[in-house]
Image (cartoon, rainbow over all chains, first blue to last red; front, side, top):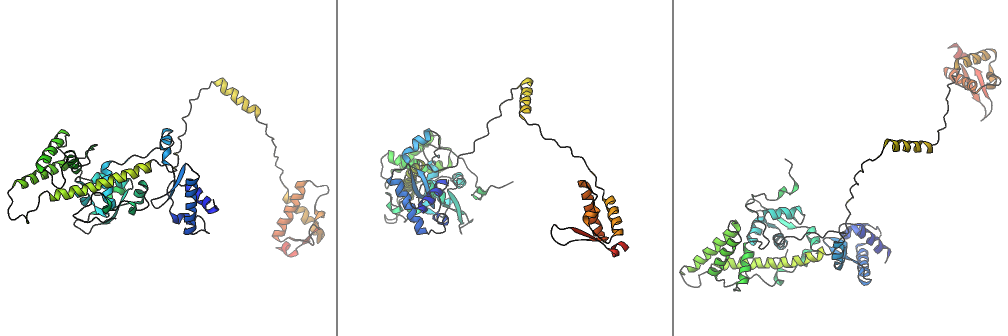
Length: 181
Length: 247
């Protein structure tokens, strides 16, 4: 691997969170975004071609080294790491609505789900998966929610456009087109 | 009261929070019924579905939950509307089920996205990121099990291995600066200019030399005499200062 790739590998290994491209470029004053991207490709290819136990993944707004999924059971059995909890169906429904309709207020979410979502919004906010992005101009100026970069990390997405477009889903709404966030 | 940052979230009173493993809400239950009964979502037999819905929430003990009760009431209203004779022409008639169908379809779309998110999340959860290990807690202190004899033996061992320190007695030797000043004055009274060796006693002790040195410096400061050295390490000459003496 070239020296820049080695440097980036070391930084990515040491970091507990995904590192954005900008921060990676800052690590070496002689590098450029293009050089960093090429070096990241080189690391990813090295891991894939040589068959490493880890892989380099782009998610959220950065890059991160992750273990390959086939070792999940071994790692968990040895208690080397704890698998994060699954989100409940209610939490996922609320997240899905916010992801596709953001910015969206509580009343609108409740209209779609048919249930009260106050406590779920609170817990999603506490977990850093959603944030208040604005206030509606409507009556009572309700808070409007949107998803965070931690949401993208949680689902290993690079950006929201990676979610299936509403019109690609099997059930297409005939009454109104759904804008993709 | 200190407000945590998350208090920005709407804090409307929570009516009745129930954790349901089976259904995430009345729409979920309704969709399940429609699927179980294998009916067309665009042509729901409302009477049958409403009956099933009521039965299901009663057996699940959900008939106290507002969200489910509201849906039950809605279904019964639609059922009643369908029973009423249609007024006006067919063109103006709007199916009372239309709004419900729209909501069900919208909800089903959300469920589809949820399935997708669930797959993504399961896939991500199987891949571990590097994480910092939590700092290990300090091991608990073992209780001290030691007899007095053992303690004394340990002290003895330590003392024997330690080297006795080198001790120095420091004896104060006061300098006689005043005496030295008198000697210098005596010499200068006789001679105007003398080398400094001449004011030091023959075969001097170290303290005597120091006394003379301090006496010379003190007298030079007072202006009684002046000191000069023509070259480094050469003899130091002492000259009488008549003006200083006068003062």
